[in-house]
Image (cartoon, rainbow over all chains, first blue to last red; front, side, top):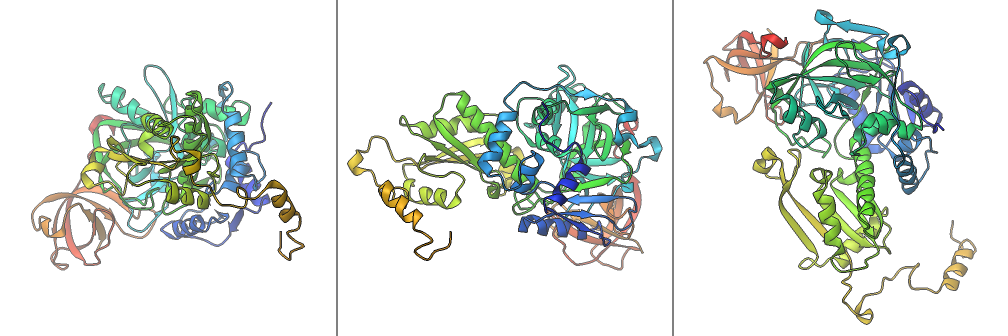
Length: 481
Length: 85
């Protein structure tokens, strides 16, 4: 049975509006930084999504900013009430993505709204699309900030949907980083480049929200099937005009083309998900564009990377944490939960465990750092079951009081990192190398009960009857709820 | 006069001046094509009046230097191999 979900970007905009999570901006805004500045401020305020109805120099186009940059918007996308708790959102996501994969269905082009306008060949011009200049100082206009790039492994046929930023270079060229350890990077550098074969791609802009969430998820399940699992029914795809890739039929804009082997062109700098412009302008992958298709009055999606919280930080943290939880549970590790803080720009994960044996924190860290998720983050905090992993105050308290700087901080050197890590040296960034650290916040099991400090909190140092009485009398004492 | 900007990947003092060199320029002319990039053979100078067009330098992470240079654009260079254009 299908779950409650939004079939396309437009239904989701209506949903955001009905939930009070949207502001419709009727006055004209400039694609040259003004739109970006509005979205940036919205991200920093965790505010409602701006729906831009009029874009300077681009009559007929609209834009949606910060579509999924908060937990209430994420809850809504999953068909939950916007005030659903983070654990509840995680529970629903995990439940839906633990079943059998659901294969997509292919629809005819007549039934695909993304084919309402088709431009190919010499008529293709990326400047006909309102790519925003997202931040002052960026290396170019970024058409693809909340999007997904579709590619296919040439031998196995495995499909990948992922978010790989793309900068408009000229009328028919985009450039962007394709990191070698990413799914698309493995395909491109291990298969297409050695054969000197261009890799077909399709950039999807303004897809339904669940497809976007799937594109951010580091799941081993192909994203088109993963999207179906979240929907509870197949996602509808349609074949591209100039290659055999399949794209969501109801997306707003599709850009088709090839990633060229053996050539790099300059891309960046760009305000990145870490909240810095870290990676320099340097030669990156080249996307040559052959076709653009789009819906009537297309709505471009705009995210704005910077200090927390943007879509990438929130959704990547959310899905990385839950995939780590699946991994640890699959290995039989007695964990109570995993939460990656979006404010850490998905660099810091908190793992709760009921410590059953010594060394469990190291085992957890080695497992998650050693997984395919490892390059994307570098800090693990392991706490016990008395700590609410979603409560930053409790986590900071545990970190500050239970982690011995000499005994409990474990550093893993020469690990895989990303060129975007602000803390890494320029040399380490260049080769994607970084260090990792475990903060073991568990009291050692070989301490005697008599020597183990007792947590002093309302929930732990009063008898249950006293707690119940205080709670029952709380308002009678004169406090509000 | 056309206005461009460019990103110096090293220090501005190390930039080759008054000799033909290849850089990426971005056209800052207002309109839909603003920020169109191109590889180009140019001559450039820190003297803002030496060549006909204006060049605004930035550093590698986008820092705007705010000091105008001048540039002569000799020709654009298409980096895309013929077979894939």
